[in-house]
Image 1: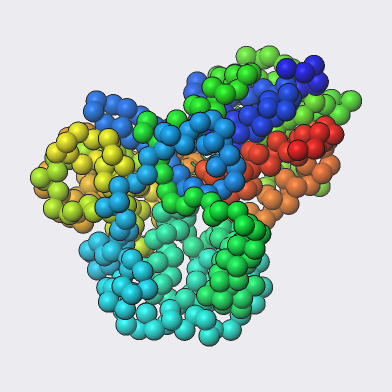
Image 2: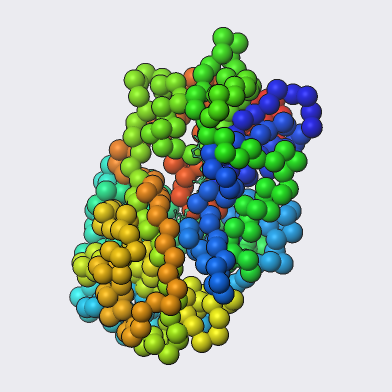
Length: 459
Ligand SMILES: Cc1cc2nc3c(=O)[nH]c(=O)nc-3n(C[C@H](O)[C@H](O)[C@H](O)COP(=O)(O)OP(=O)(O)OC[C@H]3O[C@@H](n4cnc5c(N)ncnc54)[C@H](O)[C@@H]3O)c2cc1C
């Protein structure tokens, strides 16, 4: 380790660990501080009795450059688990029944997912005029304008529920789904825009092979990734050390105070997590009295096991998502034991039920009795389950996913202004660079590059 002034990284989730990994690789004395007693942040795999289950993210999408680099450098490719080939179908509830989404263009005309009218409306997308500026447009307005009401209700709405636990009427299309906005901008329609974007990507790749695609996990679950990242660090994360105060010193450095009163001065700090409490530990952003609020969707993840023979549905897919118009009290169910092998014993199935979100925020806080009374009967009806669960585990996430609403622009502007105005201050993570795990890895890497560049070390 060099004797250079050091970097403090707040948060031992994927963003913070990735930033630390790339900084320490360059010989920078970077130290991660974590509030809780574990690393991984949202990534939470548990093994209980004969069950292996995820209480945070369930699947990791391959293909992003930083993820692929980490899988290679950490020798993790051999531990990847692809999904079972039989689990390809994705279901959406329609008229109270799980309906498989069409597997391809040939299946589209025969699929019960949309009505004849809905299908016709979708097919007219390439001929619809380009819209006004998408900057102030919500996902719902964009989807209805380009794809029609039915695709909004039965396609976009359940997927926004599945990805953001969010409400398409609140999310800004340019922030939550920037590729959609870019495709329309480039091609005048999504159809032509995606063709253009694919061509541009191919050109940018040159002759290089396509990056791997598809969702994966690890044999031991997703926590394998943060654990391996942490093991690769020469300076291990300091646990049970919540940041309590960050102050700029007279000479442009940062004095951090942690719970317990310990205080230390750092040349640079990287914040990879957000909450009102954390915002209160920082100076006010330039030209504002307080940090703009970020809206978070709360989620509860409930893991359930049943004897296979008591479940009528074949569970032959990834899972089922619930459109808001279907008025069921949950967001969706992942068929966890169908998706990846080794999740439950022979003769049993394991499900991950997602409750709450922007749609039913109060349900994210339900206790077990309330979930059993108010939610499980609807799940049982949808999947024809004839028994009580033989295993039940719940995890509450009061602030699961940041919502990229139209107001979120203010937070992004403030964070950019702070980075510009304050030497040695950096922000990364799911509140600024995208909510998926690969986006958080990219965000951690980007932050490490910015920090290195500020130290005159270009990578
Ligand atoms: C229920 C759920 C399901 C999801 N499903 C998927 C999925 O299937 N696929 C996917 O790609 N993504 C999914 N995501 C999103 C993804 O998991 C997260 O966006 C990502 O893991 C966030 O990583 P991070 O490092 O930015 O933040 P976090 O993982 O939140 O880590 C931040 C860390 O900072 C710590 N911290 C907080 N305050 C302080 C403080 N004051 N001082 C020190 N430390 C502090 C926290 O304890 C935490 O460990 C899901 C998220 C949730 C919650």
